[in-house]
Length: 300
Image 1 (cartoon, rainbow, N blue to C red):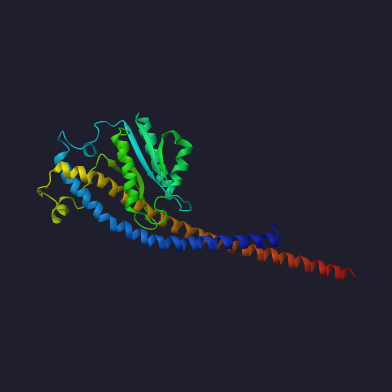
Image 2 (cartoon, rainbow, N blue to C red; image 1 turned 90 degrees about the vertical axis):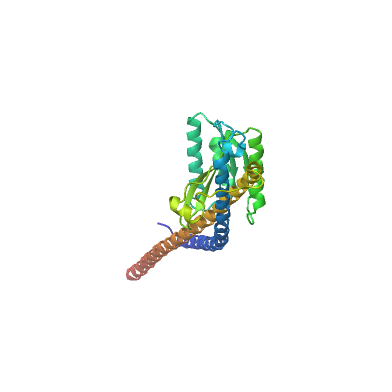
């Protein structure tokens, strides 16, 4: 049985931990609000750019002069996986879910005889994948958005990817991240960046598209479609990476807030159990001392 001193030390230690987790929960909640606003504000722009490119892609994809970012290299041999995780832990299953999907895709591509390269964003992804797939890691980036995520950081990442693509380093690029749905729910998403994959049809189908004026529209482009695509496709790559990183940042803070809330509650439950055990032990010690005093008095 633990002594009273040991129990007091454990209660004091758990209370200190509870204060830390409670403070981290409040900080995560504050950051979540800003990150969620950024992610929600970026969605309409990214979705509209995808629609414009999808309209152009329908007309240009089948042509022999289609840009490589749209039509691809004609091969499917080498895949680049961009695995976006966080630099810090204590975020519940946020990083684990992304890394689980990344490992699944690596195994799937490896079994299919494909060559896989990995670009990690975040220290947790780098450290975890390095243990099993160090030979596949092409590059690693950390401290992205440490203070505040900016579009310039996403553009720098897109330039790295484009440079590798133009050098023939890969045929298909996919980014794996968590899409924010709520503080309790983050959806693991794998989005193909290169070649450009048109967005899926909206839930409302053709009726919804018609109501927004997108179905059956005929556009005249100035300058030519080729010049527009040459400008838009690299920009779209940066926009999609920026949107994914914003979604990831909001998901990280939501997962951390939920994890710290659970940790704070568990610490409270543990303090209650330790306090009850402490009181029982103290009562037993006092009873034992009283018995010894009474026995000694009777012996006299």
